[in-house]
Length: 422
Image (cartoon, rainbow, N blue to C red; front, side, top):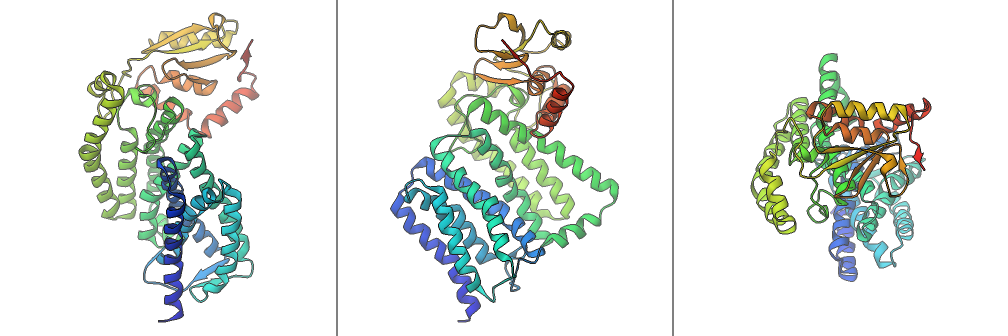
């Protein structure tokens, strides 16, 4: 047996054996098991891309291998995923819920073992810089993602992390399998005309929005995630779910089909077809049974009035939302008057002077059933979703994190930003 073979075997089965021992020691419950799923997905999706950056920057290189993802041989890749995705959170639990100590232990192990992996892994002179950078971007967030799941904290942030995690697995991995590395992706990109490149990016942006919006509605309206192990605690019928039942499945399927065209490969399209079959088969049966058990007639009514894949033109929601506005503010009153002229569905316009609770922002959207509130630009974005699908798309786009912050900053700079009503 060659040294290369021994290294490949040790890099995979060492972490697997350690995981088995820690599982026996910790005996994870449902919440920790869910956290392990999240942390493993986070590492598996993003590790190959950061490793490609490290390789292209000269921090390290690998012995060519028949089985690899990007430049990363399959055995070290899987071993790295198991170590940081499973061993790390389990070790943190075994050490008394101390993620920072677990991170330090695993980084020290990497610093000691990586120089011993030659010739499978050949290190550059400053390779430790990439090790610390990748640990900061992957290992530490994975540890806290698992920990927050156990204690049911930071649900919006965890949902935001799940988007690149699961999206990276189902969409990012096929890119690497087909294009091999960054040079292959770049060559494929340059093979398209400028118009096709713009069309591709625009399509990606458009079909990403329903899934991202649905994630946000799940987190803020239902305090849950799209993973069945940690579902929303309340039935979400507002926002994008007032238009269709399966916005996340619609996004993922559309993105896979776009990727299939871009790569000229049938594999992403096959994944899309499998996803549709799964969604319309087992998932629909399982979801219907679970939702009927948890929400009863409310779910049955929602199921009858909303299609799974094709949105309605007007929102359909059994629950009324409120848009509170500062009636002493001329600009706010003009905004309220504009919404009133659009005849919004299930949206009541209320004067902030009538509010009896805690102080409001001068434009606040409120959903009494779930207790969700949005203010400023996000409040207007939510209110737009009560008009019709055309305005709803504008609202979904405006509420995308990053875009909403930029627009809000512009309003704040112009003096029309958020202001608490005393």
